[in-house]
Picture 1 (cartoon, helix red, strand yellow):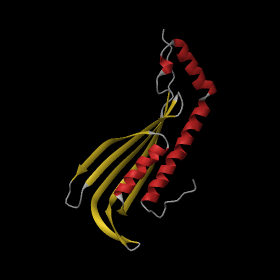
Picture 2 (cartoon, one colour):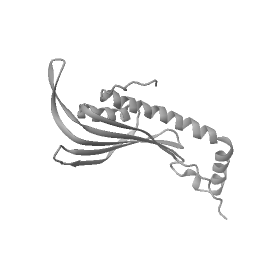
Picture 3 (cartoon, rainbow, N blue to C red):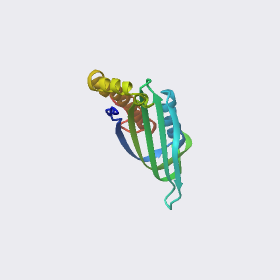
Picture 4 (cartoon, rainbow, N blue to C red):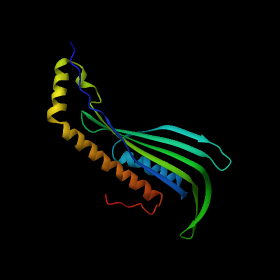
Length: 176
């Protein structure tokens, strides 16, 4: 008779949804998100890109997904989904110099996920399943639920703040 393995759910949560309308530098914005992932040693991929022409301006959808192995047992996953409407090029005079920027509306959704036992190591043998169940029930439950989840939450909140800084939003600065 096989011993059933108790499930630790992967913790998945939408951290924030930023809505923005105005003038922004698309290239700086794109590079800022990508560099945030790289600076924190995530394996980052652009998983989706859609570009649709509309009468008011292009509609663009981009998704970034980043993964980082935090330990042999825990993996962090972060995703950023951008949706931009009515994006047009505009010339702006800033500090006496003309700059080509973009204008449009956008929604940015940031999600995070903490995955436990991502390599499925505790599914190989009955002894490993019993060890896993002991760890989950008695020893590591609170440490697993509070430590990695809390750490990733604050790390992803820095991405939220960085995006607002790049977009020059009034609420760009936070307590963290």
